[in-house]
Length: 242
Image (cartoon, rainbow, N blue to C red; front, side, top):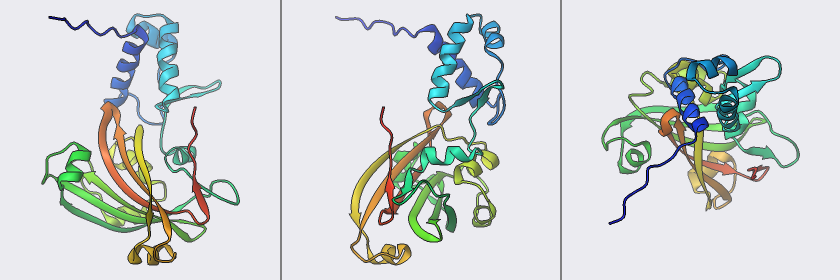
């Protein structure tokens, strides 16, 4: 009978995990500087080179950001540049345009089977359902519907969404201590139904891009399931591959 071999994790990956744990527990908050590589090397009892390799991976994954001459900081959604990491729309006739969110609804409900499966919670658990449009140059381009676990986002409401001036993810970070660190998306083409067509000012049956996103915080915990419909008459979805 074959025996499973123990999984070997390189030392820098172990240090990376320890740094992520510190981020998850809030030892270093979004926007704050983390200790220097020398200090981290002393803390973990490893070489600076090992720490540097761990930090490099975290910077490549957008959990940390290096600033020349200033140090290494925890990434934050308060940085306007962070918006276009998750919003990949660009105008056909130019560069990215800062969108304006128009919240429509914020309701409490119970998780159905699909929401429960995506959010990793039990069916019937409390959730919040958010609906909004995103406008570019005053034109509606995106309709979003978001599902959030109720225990994580207690107190979120429509007034809060309407008053917030930044991105939705910066609201999650500032008000609820939830930072999105990665997301997976599924894209497909669909035809606009009458109600959606009216909201996006397109013809019924016009082609739309359906984008389903599952966003995760530290510990690979899913905390937002989102379904969006994008009008691509004047915009395109861009993704950089490497």
